[in-house]
Length: 389
Image 1 (cartoon, one colour):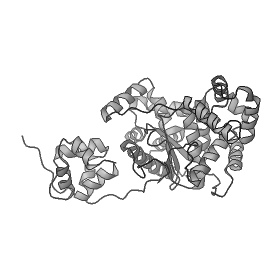
Image 2 (tube, one colour):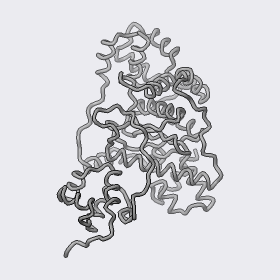
Image 3 (cartoon, rainbow, N blue to C red):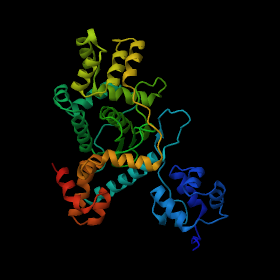
Image 4 (cartoon, one colour):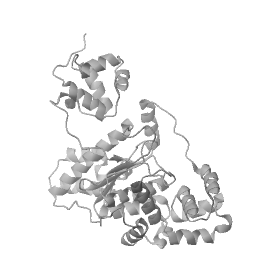
């Protein structure tokens, strides 16, 4: 039986959907088991795609089939500024990163609509900063504002408790924090302060200590009002002024200069021993890499010592996998996590509360609520109960 042909597909829409999803012509031809010439002819309007091909691409792009039937490409918000400093990858992102960015924009828009429905203020209640401001003194002010005292930092049992505490503080000032499985070799986080509510997205694949650093780094982009997608890395000597400022803010927030110097003096005799680094890292819930960088910055160790010790903690290079392998691996990693815990980890208490309030007031349907939270009906009450704790 011949494959059915779709007529009336605008070649500009076909091309836009491919490019906006981060796919090359070679990627598409491989996916559809055809030639580059066939895809080029579809995008030039010389040939129409089959229904089977459109269904396959709809699934691959995570777009509704109806998107291919639009009369013209749909305007989308520009991507955040690329601050990653990755060679040959300026404004070129992994397909999954692009998908997560698109999802974050959708959740940001939904959050805005849900907030309007219940007359909830979406503007972040924070003081904006300028690049000329001192990031260290500003970090000290936010430690006070968030109630992130030294004693509290020490009392937390795990870095996860620190992360959740800081996430709650940001949600209190109308900044939503989302987490998703963004490939950390491509990007570790991004900030979207160009719309309200402001949004920060972090990679759930990152270590929790690195995520805490990235959280405060992206918060710095928020208070600067600078949309950004980046790879927070305080070890990179070629950072521009904005990335350097955000790293200084994050580093100072998590371990102020006074704190750092006091801690390093106390442990000066065996400062770079594995046991010492583990002890300080556990006590203050910061990464060993950040500790070493501060030791170098405040002249407690030499540059050669810094490089030698840092090599112990460099992450292994991620192995290359195809899309099917990646999906299988993610299922293995997330298999033991309860759905309600995973949902709250991904979208946060604030977003769940917005959905719940809108559902309770009949502004959205039960199906809408499930779709917004990406859960099934059997998990709805569990998610709401955990969010209200």
